[in-house]
Image (cartoon, rainbow, N blue to C red; front, side, top):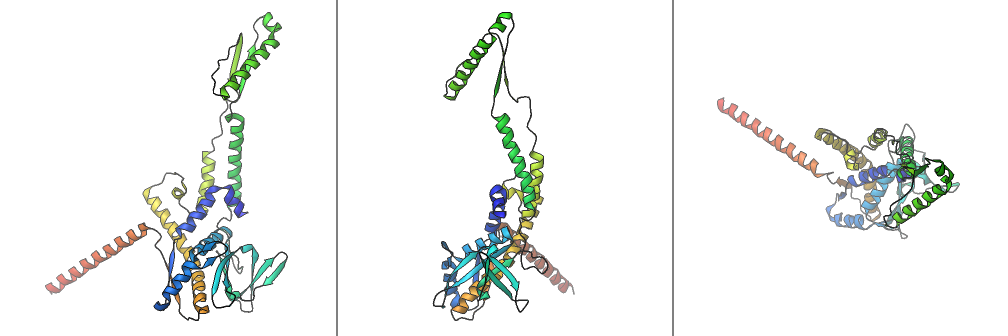
Length: 346
């Protein structure tokens, strides 16, 4: 359902895609500096599924699944000799079933294969993350939860707009011949057929780029069908629905090309809200990245630990942090100057 929703409403797909890209890149720092080069080589060259390369590619797909379905799953694939990691695979969350194991803090995973459930022997090789799970349920909730109802109304409005344009947007003409005298009534049928033929010839000629005048005898009235009607104004309901959808997706409207009036202060606050959302997703992804990298080091016979360092979300954050450090330094300088003067006076 959520995949169909993203296909039906492009703005939802654009919001999810932008969120994944805005989450940014990262680097993994090894506690033992001598193993850093080996870890970097693994991160940049690990195989992802059938066509991907690099841990960043895996994390992007992982986050996309997490936002769309509320759950994300993956697998660490060990090489045949068991001495290295052959690659990583993204799994469909629908194929994973999570149950409480002997220890309530250690889940057990089952792979759904048709009507059968196959228990995963080595659960440490399974990667699973739930987005905002409720209560004791191990499964998360999609960010798109609640949007299908709004999207259904939105698509109904767009469908009605298309139908209206099919009816009135494609211009049709009504040609009416009004007989005035008895002779006109006598030959009304023949003249109506002649007018229809001339009108049809003129319209066909215009399709070929030829301009042809329409000549008729008598009182002939030509009107555009539906010209007196007006399209229903859909701007207000469409905007209300899009406001609800963008609020659920936590994306500022201007990032989606929606030119709604907003002040500079409001745009700054929206950017701050987006930054907090991205930081939340990063907190969910950090344990996954650490598990993958430390599993690689462990299989390689190394006991080093790792730390994930994320890139700054945007340059505006760096500018604001730099300004804050400058103001703190100026305040500290003023305080030191005042203290020096007090000591001199004493």
